[in-house]
Amino acid sequence: MKSLSRQGLYDPTNEHDSCGVGFVANIKGRKSHDIIRDGLKILANLDHRGAVGDDPLVGDGAGCMIQIPDRLLRDWATKAGHELPAAGDYAVAM
Image (cartoon, rainbow, N blue to C red; front, side, top):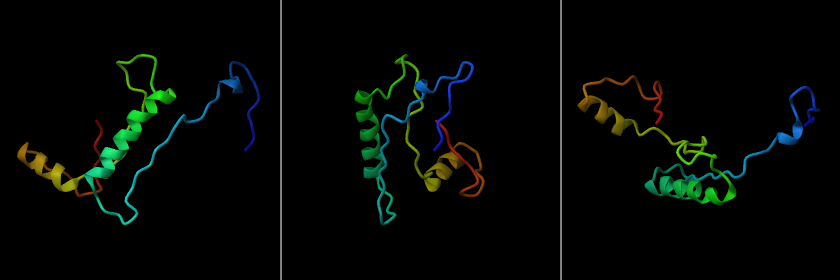
């Protein structure tokens, strides 16, 4: 990969890579709360590696990406009087 050279206000010495990445999955494709729990444990343990922002009240973008529990969300939406599109045609952000 070619390095960029210093130009204008850009200085390549300010570049940095991810300080830590965790990945948890069941290789047989089984869904489990244990996977979520382990992922959250990884996220909490990255704190010592500087994976936090300067302001403790503001997130740094770290988080978990999980499969949407369609049946659960569809049930909640129905109880709230909403209708969801087909599974795979909607997203959830928190």
